[in-house]
Length: 112
Image (cartoon, rainbow, N blue to C red):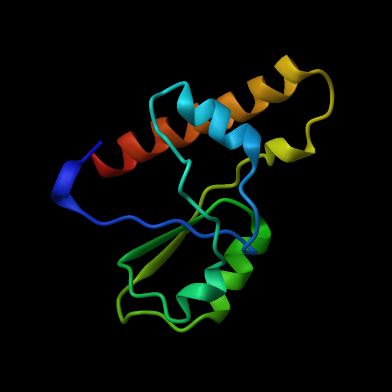
């Protein structure tokens, strides 16, 4: 959304295999995650970012324990984990879509 104006990276609580539902809902908005592999916050070793945004309470606590760049900030966006939603395929997809759309809205509002 912001081109070359900044650099963003993502990390989760643990590295592992991609969530196939994430790929489906991101494909819907033309973001191809075919070659993306999840890595962990710990993989970053030292947070060299001006801002770290966490999406879960667990990630917020983890980010607080890592060394980080002087003057960097941690901002917490408490969002529901769509992987906890059970039901039919559409119900699960809708939970992931809602999270995706919420994050997009927050990113645009925060960085515009």
